[in-house]
Length: 234
Image 1 (cartoon, rainbow, N blue to C red):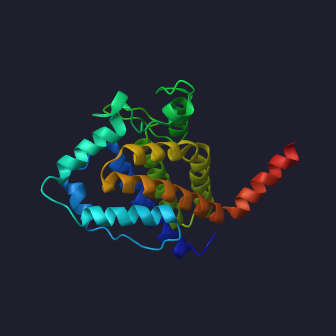
Image 2: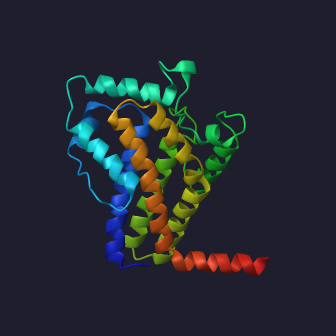
């Protein structure tokens, strides 16, 4: 693993980003969220074009807030993810099952796989959440929880547990997030009318790509050993 101090710093940034992304997908923006985002630093030249575009669009939107911005964002959220006021009620449906099942329906195999992953991690569902365990907000929240567990393991100098948690994150990105998020992002860019939700689309796609590369680098030795064992088993 890289220097532990540097790793912990990166982890805190990952935690904050997953937390923000999950919140923005979960429900419409409220005044508190908007106020906190106005204070957000928007980096430039991160090395990933989608991340840079996302932050640029966020900065442009947040720099031009007006008294009806919350109303605009509520309408755009409903239009983008639910299909309100769109032809045929088409939308960027935010559930993995819709994008990975042949019938494009919710509550399909992907939901069952995701549910099993949450259970294996000791997580329970919320009775007040009806949108499905494979909703993008919940999948991103799962990553947020796993990153927090990694931070706690590093703070305790438990590198074995930290590696295990990081491997879970890597597998979740490669087995799930990367298999369907690009499709929902493409639809978001089609249906969103505000720079805010276009920014969210670009940042989500770019961040997942960057995070996968980061985890692959951190876990390079573990991944190489895993690939070797798989070849030995053939």
